[in-house]
Length: 328
Image: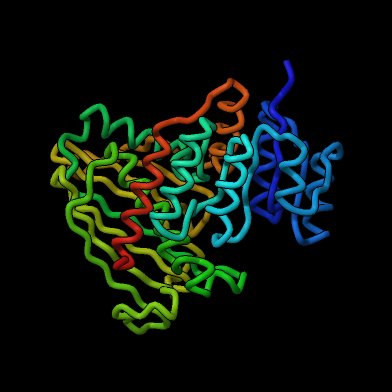
């Protein structure tokens, strides 16, 4: 049985990493590569020597692909995803799926109409620690989860200029990092509706107070869910935090708690713990090769013949929360 033929649109570092994960899973064939950087395209071609090097998405889709992996700037995600879906290709897209909920909703609707598998690289769902925490919450072992605190501070910030252009990025650290926090909170709690949202966004230490001509580099938000749970989110770029990254997701119930935390400022190594009063039990520890699991999962599901999955509506729910944080 032949493997699904995949095109990889955008093969910078993250695009090549996800490409490697899919190929290592053995579920798909790399049929085409496209990137405006000749160096990036050449590096990707070394991973898949048999793949055609295409000029753009139109040229890729002319090759009758089964799926497209999109790792381009955020402003292009929705339009390129819709184009690929309408051409009959499944889509795996880097986050965010759209700069606004309207863009994300349009992509999900295109996938529904085309009956094609759609997924976004919400990779932290695939850490072993977060999966264990979600299982604890779903089983009721934490009791009623009434509070959650999630943090993502990146000491560096993005290195591409478009991230700092509101029209191209759709937002700053909330769009880049906060999307993971919102997704994890709602995913662990089985996507309850958000009843109330409050947020404060800052740029260069100054409160933006509704300004839309700059992107935020620090943000804090609170979500009150219809389930009665309070979720607090904080994220930033270039924070003076004494280490490269601070990443955590903590959930507190009336029968126990659980948390995922990065180790010693690492972007990749995590430990997960379960709490009972003052006692802590280790659930998982590093190493855990989680980075490419979302990509490999999509590839394997595509190879198994899966089509549109209604869970894609969760992507719209996350985008709607981001809109509310931005006051849109």
